[in-house]
Length: 81
Image (tube, rainbow, N blue to C red; front, side, top):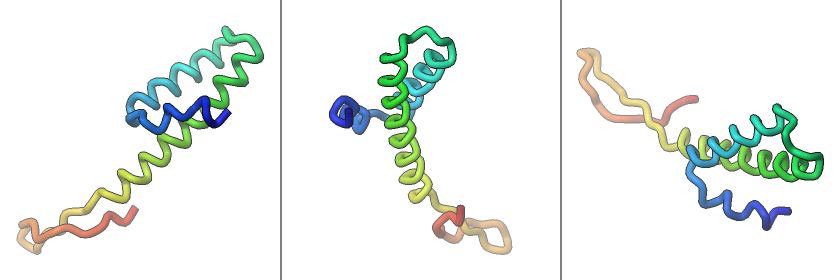
């Protein structure tokens, strides 16, 4: 099943999240037969993991601007999340 979700690696965060929201809606509505529900649930899990990885990467890149006593920017430092 992993090879069926290989395309997920190329998705942007926004595209993966949109697909995940669509899957959640479909599962919540009960419109999918059991076999399809299992398959889209597995895809949803892969999309969730992909989104979490992208968020961790983005978080690691965010920096906090440091200010002097008079409020002027003096540089940046890693964000302490």
